[in-house]
Amino acid sequence: MTDPEQSETAGEVRAAGDRALLVIPPLHAMIAELVSALRPRPAGVVDVLPAAETVLVTLASPAAAEQVRKHLRALLARLDAAARVGVGDRSLPERPIATLGGDDIAAEPLVIPVRYDGADLAEVARLLGLTPEQVIAEHTGTVWRCAFVGFAPGFGYLESPDGRLTVPRRTQSRTAIPAGAVALAGGYSAVYPRESPGGWQLIGTTDLTMWQVDREPPALVRAGSRVRFLDVGVRA
Amino acid sequence: MSGLRVERVGPLATIQDLGRPGWFESGVGTAGAADRASLRLANRLVGNPEGAAGVEVLLGGLELLAERHATVAVTGAAAPITVDDRPMGSASVLEMEEGQRLRLGFAATGLRVYVAVRGGVEVAPVLGSRSRDTLSGIGPEPLRAGDVLPLGPPPRDWPIVDVAPVPALGGDLLTLRAMPGPRADWFADAAALFAGEWTVSSETDRIGARLDRRTGPTLRRSVSGELPTEGMALGSVQVPPSGQPVVFLADHPITGGYPVIAVVVDADVDAVAQARPGQPLRFRRLE
Image 1 (tube, chains in turn blue, green):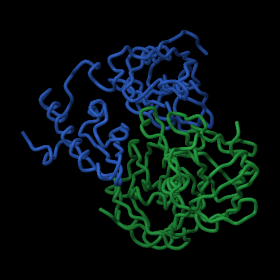
Image 2 (tube, each protein chain N blue to C red):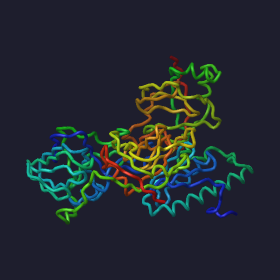
Image 3 (cartoon, rainbow over the protein chains, first blue to last red):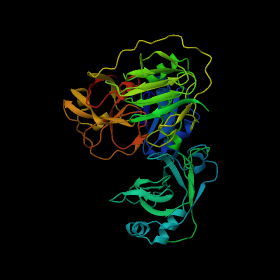
Image 4 (cartoon, chains in turn red, purple):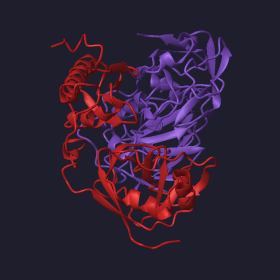
């Protein structure tokens, strides 16, 4: 058993000033487990923000840094050890998706009804060498998981377990994308919660209100949420 | 409902408290007063809890009419203060009778003035806070002439001093303590940030203060790839490809895609929020 303080293989905890720590786990797939393990918040932790490859942990005070850092290092060591035991290499063990991620994970995935009428659907199909119907089948045929939220309140970066439908951003971004636009870019899918500029490829539209400030919780999709898209069968 | 009627606003006046921590999961940042120490002080002067909502005024130009008796305090940037044309001191307890007007001139130094009122500005909180987040558009709308600021019930505590001596905000060289950032290793020489001087550019707002180089080496990246989106802490010094750094303030985006070379320590973030365009500053390295 290695001392978690000495372990060189269990990722890193870097200072982000005196009121935050940036956790860099050795595996991207550990982010969901880290987020899950940090809920409820350990003493001294104000908020937890997962992103593509890191988790930012903000602190109640600079004095909490040492204790929280220790806690995070121990957590990383534990996850790393579990990953090694699981399959003998650096990938996470296979396990039911229900044990990964946030506290709404055990629940049924959120269903988002979509009209696949996006302006870039044909282009996405061309980029992937598929027909538009195949793109829709791929998009609706998987359970997406919200890896992190950013860009705007309620804008969740949804990833699929197999990285399906990975397309680049548009070369020219649009100045106004309407609220409810369903889009793809960089391996993620997302729904624009409000009108905003953006460079993602638009494949459809939903009528669901993704973000409503006086609703509890205001964001339909949060870090850890699982999502399934449903084709409501109306074409452009 | 009576309270303080907004008769005039300058460039921007928003309602602020100490923000809404704990909403990252929904993609919402903390916001809150850009200069938290000044809001706290103003609240203490009028006997409020430190986190009561007050008004954050950019530069000055605010005029408030008391529709009933109100106890107020003005802190932060040194804007001339009058109550019915009588000059008043900054960081002092001001009693306004019904019908009296508080006017703020424009600050000669500093950027943000804070007005606290006994009982606090009691607009409806959004996600637990009365702060306006100018990036995400959450919270009470910026003040407009004709708005009435509703006042909460007076707290149990009474003001314990008449005036709090605070050092004036100067326009001279500002020294900010900063720790090496989580992506300092993305730069050819991260120490370059701490060498020489910077000036605050005209692009400074509640989201961040952009800096121009005054003297010293440029910030050059050694890793040219794109940084996968990651969380950004308050005070982060983010460096876009231009090499012109931005210090993230209260309404900063919670994630970003440019490397953070250093992070201003929490206690010095308030000073960045008060730094005016053209003001020189330097970073002092703190481990």
